[in-house]
Length: 466
Image 1: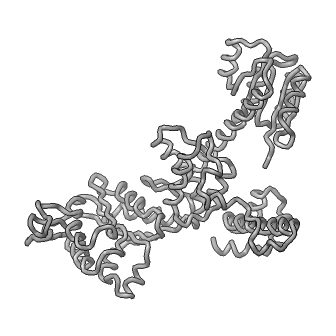
Image 2: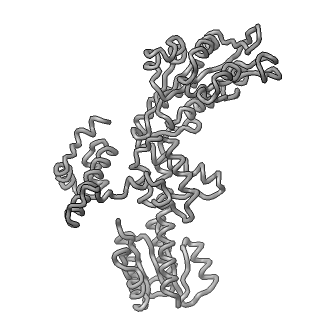
Image 3: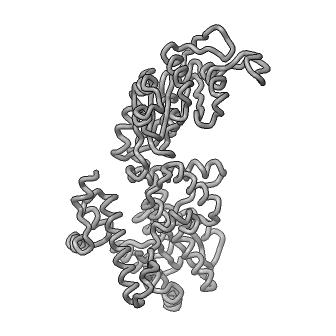
């Protein structure tokens, strides 16, 4: 990990040495300047994450250093020091953008804490900016957000569906957001002023399904103590979303097919049919064609539903959308909690991006909600994520079968395993683009080529997947 660069400006050598001592070189890169003029020259020649400057110095004062640092890098944090502590000076420094103010003399521990908090704020600011950039260029329809190539045809079909009134079938793995798609179609179509009524067909007891969908009249069965409209009637003028449509019993499939075709429903126990103006959107996570072939789903209903088919890709195939979804979900759940959105530490964010998310967007949202609930600090740490997610960036050092090896052999083996996993993840995310992968890895293109060859990872295979 790159060490944060800290510039310390002070005309007193003992303070320069103090910061060199309390900011160890294995964690920080500390550069010192013996006066304000030298500090300005260093700012002009290089960039720094944090500037610590005395207010009164020869050449240029601390406020001048502050202004120059912020002008060159708005994300740079500045901490000012003075032996002449005064409220007016502190107010002016904060107004100019200083993070904090150290009054000499101060305890080394106090200075260390201020440094850590200043760098933490810089990291959060940059992460917030990166998340905002991630939102640039996204396509957003109601609560659905996407920017990946895999979602482009989905977005196009949603817009077409919203512009028409045809029946829609949404398919995809559990948790991919099928109801989100249905709501997006409803919210942007001509029926948006009507109700959106959702029902899980697999959650209704079989004897009650007909009554739930079509309603019943008083006395039609035990417990029918009053007339009741069904979900079709409740959705009149709007949209009825039938989730897990494959779980509907065959006998009900016949009646549903007729209701969609005729746009009429008959309540249980009634002798007359009532017209309904309902747009039906159905969803399933199973292969309906296979169910039809197996005699478990009616062919006529399948074709009645499959007028416009939207197939949602799993989250593992739309990795570009993960940072976008993270930004949106963080903002959403922070808003519900009445708190400011928090960011992730680099390690935690890396785990979120690398994890395959078998439970798709639903699993991602649950993980973020859990992380927010168990985190106390300004950023979400790796430990706040579910163990399976966190494990995606933790090296798996040994297996039981490795116990016969020496320590050095185990370390070498673990390094090889982790390196190969990293190369595969890198090639997968960047679709075999070696030039971009080398930039991401922070190495020369030729060096990455050698690593790929050594570990048997062929970039061509990943290009074929894109």
